[in-house]
Image (cartoon, rainbow, N blue to C red; front, side):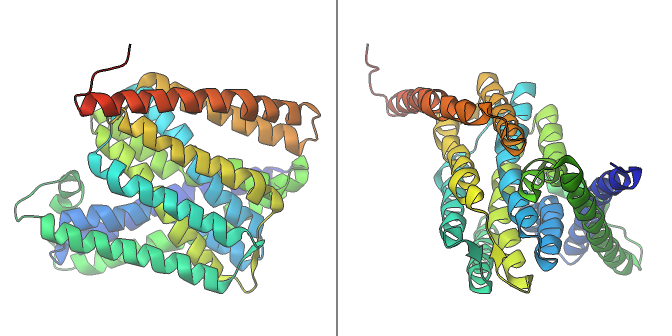
Length: 367
């Protein structure tokens, strides 16, 4: 393994994170300068910014014909967002979950996951598949903008108001400067994604790992750094509902916008590995479906649930590494997880959710 490969990997990660930050700040300030609601800025521009690294890497990979990295990046990022980011955030402090997330956004996230999985069942993503996914994110964003415009009232302050709107540069060249921020952010994202993909392919070849495994692990974690930073800081500052909403919104964007655009720009159909269809997609769906009973039970994520999330992510990553190395214990390990641990967890979550449902409706608990 060469030093150049590690320089590409580390440099790519740094440029992606920094590029996303510059892009978000420039776009948010520009939007605020033209009088766009801070709520809309938070729901659209900021949500796009935290998922910009996934967008850059998956689009670049799809364009270069490296479909495994493009697909693995999205699936791996979604799994890491829930198990890794929410797990770590919940360990800092129990996280609050808004009722809108449970009633609308989480079900939409699950539906988007099933749609992406269904479109991949034929073994590839075509331009038509990409168009369907991208049309869904446009519809969802349009719904958010319309509903937020109806709900937002003049003078209503949000966190994005303090972080972005209040910092709008009053200088007469502010529009030009913010546009330059946007262009610089995009340039950094493109450069960072090029370096990261090149380094990841070299690493996969050097370690004998598949590009899919690299996409599911190293690249997925790297491109999820903005979500990780946002949620951890939000949890540390006590903005616990933001920590959860950031992850749900990012997963929706990854499934619909990132996969959709990757399918649209790819010169050929993006091949989806059979292992991704039969194992990684189901794992991602199980993780996202598990959010419903956990979120519903008291509308919070407790520390023990965060620890459970983290332990599952460690187990999932360990399985991927064992399988890629041809370890004979991999299948036994997977059977133990699927046959015993997952059903036991599912029963526990069901009982907790049922108990919470009875409490919320004032029904007596069974003895």
